[in-house]
Amino acid sequence: MSHIYMINTKIKTLKMKKIAFLIPFLATLIFTSCEEDYKFNLEVAKKTKLNTSIKIILKEKSNKPVDKIQFFINGKEIPANGNIATINTADLGVGKHMISSLAFYPGKTKKTNNSFEVFADVPYQAYTYKILNSYPHDTKAYTQGLEYYNGFLYETTGHRGQSSLRKVNIKTGKVLQKIDLDKKYFGEGMTIINDKIFWLTWENKKGFIYNLNTFKKEGEFNYDKSKQGWGLTHNKTELIKSDGTNKIWFLDTETQKEKRYIQVYNHKQSISQLNELEYVNGKIYANYWQKPLISIINPKNGVVEGIVNLSGLVKEMEKTQKLVDQDDVLNGIAFDMENNRLFVTGKNWGKLFEIELVKK
Image 1 (cartoon, rainbow, N blue to C red):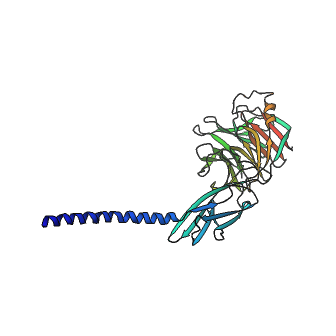
Image 2: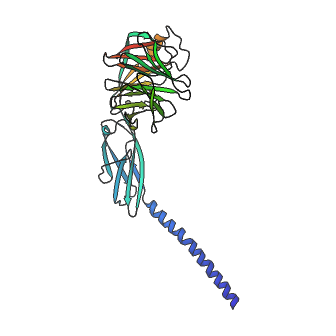
Image 3: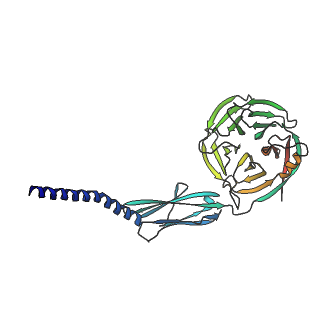
């Protein structure tokens, strides 16, 4: 009897172990099933135009009840009316915008993501140009930044081991003052505010600050949010920086911290690889990398309001200089605000051109 009793006891113990094993498994299955009962779809038009109203709708696929819904655009909460949010794209500017919803239902919450893209609502104005004057320019200057300030041209050049900051006589092209950047850096764009020169580097996420008169380095700063350092200008209250993408960043002039950015679009597409920048009469002028084009950009919303085709300047250059390197491209915009003069040049070009824009 004792032997049979022991067998029965073992059988009961095994059954209890199986039940104990199944309980958490069944609980997980029930929990997962309950969670999967709610399935959401966040609906929005994938492409739209600036200055239009669009609706964002969160739908539970089986129309199950939801306690509360919150909507967010680019991480910022927006007002909701039940499962619908309405926004005007004028508040966002052009570009790709991320949206998300947070649904609260019995005992749980669920986040759903989507995105949409905003394009300019009007075509850009096309421009050609007229050459007013031309001046000598150093053919060894791999131009990265260019700025007119108090009667002189200031220029930064690139390439590691060859990057320099220069003060130039605009009429003769003679370099009046020059310092070289540390060989480990690839110099990029520059701008001048309050007698201080701000100079970017390409891949090191670092910029330098120099005294305008002495060219002595007075400080440095980092940029962590933007991808790289390309072009630099300012609107008197903010530094304005390109990073090789379609984004243009706005930095605090005192701390050099990145505050915000705009995305650059025309009515058809995103415009990327924006390079050297200049602030001209309230608009941002931007070179395209390796293209003889300049975009005229609204700094408030990122809309490309105009495109200047300067391909004829390449042909003009080739009359007196053979552009052998694929990097010998248009790059460099400077504006004399007092006399309303616009200057452009290129990398290793032998000429600096003063031009007037002409609507097509």
